[in-house]
Length: 315
Image (cartoon, rainbow, N blue to C red; front, side):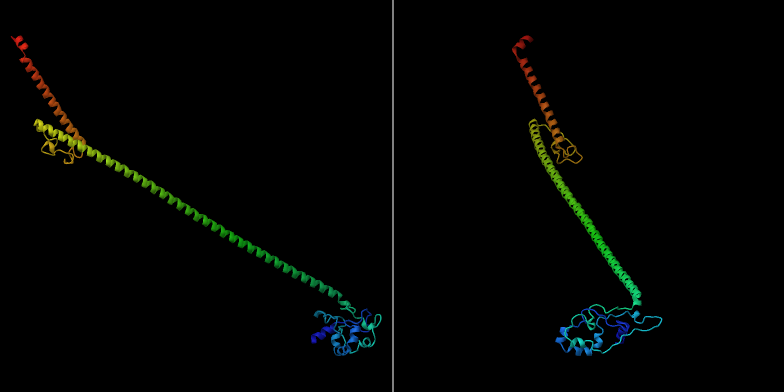
């Protein structure tokens, strides 16, 4: 309350000895018709003179409450309990401006003393500079915040792009590994198929060769058996005993490709054994041919000797 009184005392609305200005509109916040319709208004105004006198006032800065000067005097405001609205309430609506109703929404005269205009201008200038500095600081802070936010967004975008790039590289690497593994498996399957085909072909070739060999062995065995049977028949007819073909047996018939020793020429060699049998059989045939030729020559000679023609020639 004391500070409020000091503030009010520092404000001087009207200098001492001056009259109220004559301003149109009447007293501020007072209407003649409204005041006439409400007679209890003047009673409340009498009890609240202190508050009514504060309407339209403004607080003065603290540094101007006690301005220094040569005389060091202070400007004060006095409160007088004078019913300023008495004549207005008693009289009907006045015509024209009246001195008692001159306070309107306009200021009464001057809010600050004349000697404080420079100080007020300086304060306004300093206030403007301070506000401008504050506004610039706020704008600078906003710009910095926007810059930090943009940097943060760029950093997030860079991190996202790096992660996406790493993910793509990892995906490509895994895809390449999968492709290599698939190619390797395909190559392995092809190799296995080719190897199986080669083995099957080789097995078929071996089977064919084995069958051919078995067939040839069977044919050779049959041929050898036929030659042996033919030679036995001739030897029985001619009553001839042949010497052994090799050292594996005591007789001619003990030699055989299946029974000869492994160091014998006829061991598992039916071809050589068949050639040997053929040569023996051919020699036998030649011998029989020579014998038959000799016998026929003898018979011819004997017949020629016994004929009568030959006998007459002899005599």
